[in-house]
Length: 386
Ligand code: COA
Image (cartoon, rainbow, N blue to C red; front, side, top):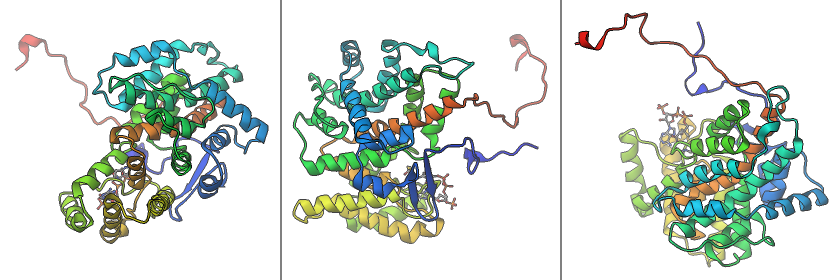
């Protein structure tokens, strides 16, 4: 009898040295470094290089990598034109998946992905990795302008990924606190072991599909509300609740109807997600920076957290990364439907680190199933069917 574990819970599907979670203690580390040490001391560029290469870079390595990213910010004219023809009501995740997948036609060279030696050309792997990570944020920010019928703002090579992202959204250079918050958000979302979208990337990568197809598969997987789209749902939920006074009754009604509370619970964590703790601290920092006035949405979120701790704590259901990220993005003036796309911008680092690990020692994913369908049957011609 074959074992069947729904959702593959607890099944080890790969070996990896990229990140690790201790879900009982609420610890996440990238390449052995605690998430907190990276969030408070590193940058998205440095963390990305750490994820990709396994070691903290030297200053020259980091400079070279940052330069290459900046040289790749610019989106090709034909891709911009293609985006103008997308329906303006299209969701940013659908736009991003389509645009990234189309990049593969503009940046060929996949013949080095061969069956014999998963990839013979490390230069190709490195160049495509930089190319994809660099273009994710500009694509997302450009879409904001294109879908509103405006010309997109061109990227600036003198800005970091986080700053350039905010600049391309607003047309103004962001203040240092906002830039830092965005940088930390990117670091926190960059990697998270074998989640659904990373698994999708591994499965696609194991077929030796192009990295553009790999990332496109991962973006599609991230777009679901049980995964990346929960951050958008959290903000919608907090708006619907409206004020801290209504939080308790709202949560109880939801639970009575057996509906989930968005931004709560995680397969791996049985305590508060360490990323949620850092984001919670950043919301507080932002509130202090703005003179201590508590935003009503933040107050409502804290009340929902308190009520959920009481109702769901015994099941190990606490805030996950999506619970506070949306509040921060809202404060930056980013539209709700773009939140998951920002998640994808950051997670492209982790996806590509896993892709590189997969193709360096590749075997195609091909699990099995337990067949529960009908036994052998005779085909019935149409005229004889009842
Ligand atoms: N709200 C209410 N109850 C929740 C819950 C939530 N957000 N998350 C989990 N639970 C409950 C389940 O109903 C279940 O209760 P039961 O044992 O009485 O049936 C128990 O906690 C275990 O949850 P389960 O659904 O088995 O966990 P999972 O590992 O399969 O699912 C998630 C994990 C993330 C899909 C789930 O927690 C969820 O749907 N969360 C909301 C969506 C979200 O925020 N996703 C972003 C994840 S980063």
